[in-house]
Picture (cartoon, rainbow, N blue to C red):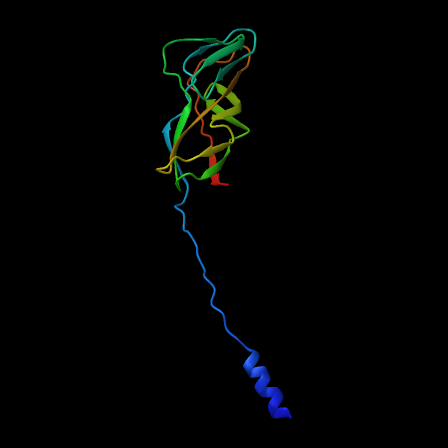
Length: 155
């Protein structure tokens, strides 16, 4: 009777093949096209701000006013990756610009697209970034510079 049980067990074992598929997408990448440019500003005894939108609109509040000597514009980046893929955008909280004369802070970064982008059929999109330059009262004259990071990642 042991022999009958063994042959039934062997006969009940089957093998199945299953399809396995995977798509390898290109790495998402970010390339700087232009830096964030607030241009020339003038200060006063009152603090103020210079707000630069991702579309290039510039406005001021308080004691800050605009000069016309230098180019102005949002930072722009080329995002490349998989066609039609969506991606998340992470902007910095704040960035310090410095010079030998002092420092300034950029806050309230904004982007277009805002928070989530979608690559086109060729796997590309332009990302624009603006922010708010906070100008203390009587800020010393000088050339201020700094760097900031933007991160993009597939959703």
